[in-house]
Figure 1 (cartoon, protein in one colour):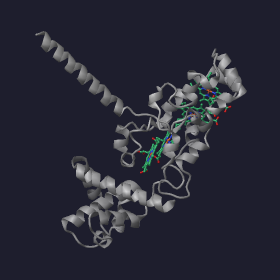
Figure 2 (tube, helix red, strand yellow):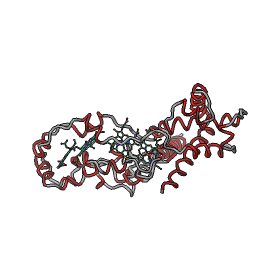
Figure 3 (tube, helix red, strand yellow):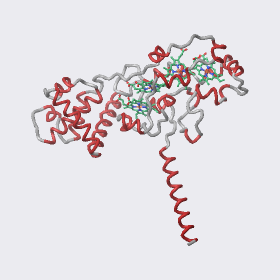
Figure 4 (spheres, protein in one colour):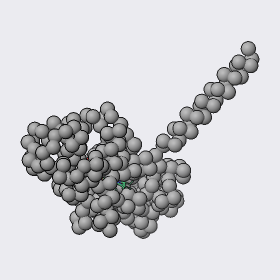
Length: 293
Ligand code: HEC
Ligand code: HEC
Ligand code: HEC
Ligand code: HEC
């Protein structure tokens, strides 16, 4: 009887350890803004000359939020708040002026630096699990892996009016609607993925030629590849149904609409198709990036 009890106990402990290890592995960690910049900068995503997310952020005050804690005003604010430490070492100040201030050391990769202030991951969540390109390109998968899209309410966690601050810097209250516009960093949506590259990549992944895709053939292989091309055009380039129909050899908007819905649904139920679509998206993206740099 006792033997069984001990055995059961051992099993419970082992199972617990396994579960904990699994939990830890999946726990996202901060990778730092420079890792995001690998793709979200200048010649990264799709466009060569438009303002990109990294430069936008770098020009914002969020990038200097840690540095300002060294200003003489900071010492005054700290004093008013009854904080004895240097502001740059106070977890309280760092909570709003940096990223991951309340996280453990193991929750930060070697590429992460507190000095970079209020970084992408402060607003979008720690990145280790979602920065893989195939996951990043799939909004739903990225959200599951911890990506967050903040709202005005998330800004208020830091941008609430603080007596200690107003007393020292005497700045007027920020108009947060305007503030949101000031830091906006949208990805321009239209026609940025080179259409030819997109069609070539889809065709070659289905062992077809681009002419097959835009031509008259209607056998199931070609039809499938054509639907995938339509789906990616819609998703990546945000083209209208009419535009997509025209690109793919004059198909009607309703055909395109049906194709996009079908691939979205099939990819949900069919992991092989899903991987194939992701693989193609990744290929197009890398191709473009190689060309840009
Ligand atoms: C390997 C390249 C790569 C890296 C690294 C990367 N991203 Fe992305 N990210 C992308 C691509 C590609 C997209 C999709 C762009 C699109 O389709 O508009 C994207 C989309 C996003 C989006 C929009 C998601 C949506 O559903 O609208 C956010 C937010 C984002 N990335 C934040 C980050 C942050 C924060 C980091 C760093 C922690 C990061 N990314 C690192 C490539 C990358
Ligand atoms: C609840 C979030 C929050 C906390 C905690 C916080 N700050 Fe701030 N701080 C802000 C925000 C947001 C701003 C931007 C201006 C504003 O809204 O007042 C700011 C601005 C400042 C500025 C002015 C920067 C400039 O551009 O001149 C200084 C200095 C500063 N904070 C110091 C501190 C110090 C020191 C502490 C710790 C005692 C601290 N802050 C704690 C959110 C915070
Ligand atoms: C102060 C918070 C904040 C910081 C810091 C921040 N973002 Fe964002 N980001 C937002 C908000 C807010 C949105 C808009 C969300 C929405 O549209 O629902 C957004 C949207 C995005 C998008 C989607 C753009 C689109 O067209 O839909 C990408 C990509 C992105 N951010 C990447 C980044 C990267 C990369 C960094 C760091 C270099 C970064 N963000 C830093 C708050 C932030
Ligand atoms: C982690 C806390 C934090 C969050 C979340 C945050 N901010 Fe900030 N923000 C700051 C700090 C700190 C400063 C001041 C930095 C400095 O002065 O260098 C600041 C400065 C700004 C400024 C410049 C203000 C000025 O006086 O010029 C704007 C605009 C801004 N934030 C907008 C936003 C918006 C919009 C959001 C939500 C999408 C947001 N912030 C989320 C901490 C935060």
